[in-house]
Length: 355
Image 1 (cartoon, rainbow, N blue to C red):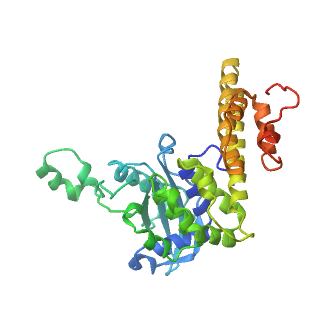
Image 2 (cartoon, one colour; image 1 turned 90 degrees about the vertical axis):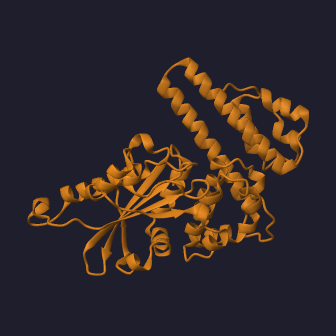
């Protein structure tokens, strides 16, 4: 599944937990027993609805599931990922709006002889907030706490305004050992640990320590799932591809090859987005900016791949790369894995024009 056009945090969560196998393991691990015992998680079904406002989708994303209760009735589990670096005080208000929208949708789509007009009760909604903000959660989980006014007035109004508290999973509050020992699928476990560390300085030095978790994803969910995880790691953090090349003696776990494939995929998507932007703008200035951005992206990735392959890069090589056209850079990247030496990568046969 492509992450093109998505915030990388959104892409990772949506791609992973849209699969009910991984979502069920997450809910099994995070929901308290008093709630979990009522849910038949084998019936978990992803809804196509997304309640997050369009303008907020760079800051949060959501997943809505239907689930059958032990008594045969229906309930909803609403998972809201807050991936802002800091806590947003208005989260509790937005969550209330989303829950009301879920009930409104249920009423409009309710199937029955009497339809929504005959409904006497609403289905349960289990709100779960998953946050990878830095530090301990400092926001308020009560609507009354964000009502502005004299304290005694707010207290007097408590019984007259909506009152609820969502389930909160603040990843920064979890020890790594606790996350890694959760009874999650291999992919869900690795996603949780990466979401926790993606912004801090521990990620690069920790990747080798978690190599077993990457291997489990490869064995359990396949190469495509591992590529998505690697794509998120490279795209959402500041680490270099070389940091993912930890020591691994197993020939059936080609982490280096997969990392280079991931870098290539990011390069392709970035170039295509640049071309699409140029087409949409329809102006020569826009197209030239797109081509220059493509050249910068190609140069950056080529230099990283050359460091991985040949360790050192000469000043002359950097100069040739800096002056190369987009088409020439594409050719150099294609030759990284096959050329015998640095000169073989940098050779330019016949000048070509960029598209």
